[in-house]
Image (cartoon, rainbow, N blue to C red; front, top):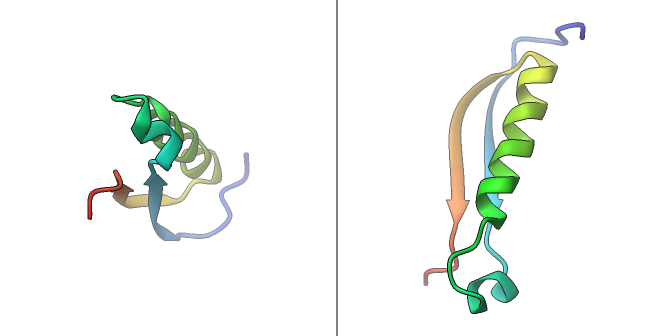
Amino acid sequence: MIKQKDYKVGIYARLSKEDARSGESTSIENQKLMLTKHVNEMGWDLREIYQDEGIS
């Protein structure tokens, strides 16, 4: 794939209420894997991973 630009990016993964009810979820891990793969394919520079596990 052609590198687009030298973007510095962060990704955000969020645990849904439905996932929280079922205990430990792989939802956030799957989101991070998919988003990290996309960032790498685009040739961007991943700087930070943010995640919201529904803790208030």
